[in-house]
Image (cartoon, rainbow, N blue to C red):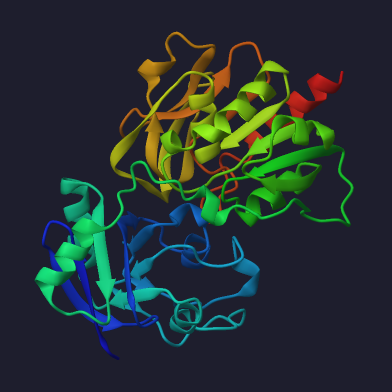
Length: 364
């Protein structure tokens, strides 16, 4: 195994072995606390522009399966592990994790203290980094990390959205027709919509309100995705028009955030974000606590909503950040977390039924 170096913008350095592609990549260094689901995490488009550290120490033991992809390819910049498994034990595996990383040009490192990295990010906050198999000069690498793009202000949606509309499963005829705005949509969201009885047409992020209406949907879904929601002002007018015309609307993660902006709210960057399958969320209406799957570095500012027609429906029990919004008079709602849970717990799957209930009421 060849050498690879991970350098953070504040000067912290980690040296380990290369277990992915050769090369060099910059990005925001973040951590995920899930114990499994590394393939779903790697192929989640919401990680565009980021280098992912897995807190669980052994990664790759069940290999890679084509059935577990969440998008057409990995979109993250790099991958950091304590120990990477080269010989997967699952009968479902078609590749080892290192083979997958190399085939998809993802620079990766193992043999480093991921607990130290996680503790550092929790104390100092998510920060820019560079991971390289080419440059081993520490000062040079730190300078590259500092010079790389900030996540705040970044628009990565244009990198991950579909180029043209498509039907998710042409052979399925559902009770409802949903148009899904692709800001970086995960496959399991569309599987869950289909399970709820929805035929799904996926459209590019820049699709206009008039183009959506031509598709005659019963409801519109706003997907997860990467980057800073405040940099996506070109998405807001379409959402405003959908809400104004009482189109049933459901947003997840970035979709929830851009809905908040479209309705007069704002967002802010979290210190180190929420990423993992063990995040507690409370439903204000019922008092019920859900354990949720999450992946976001920005959150909606609850104070910015005080003069709007939106109310907070869910809160994060760890830091009181906003986890859900509901419009007071229109059939529109969103959640910050991932009820499609891939990977993660299934506590929040009921939200897809909430969406179909809104479509039922709109049809009545």
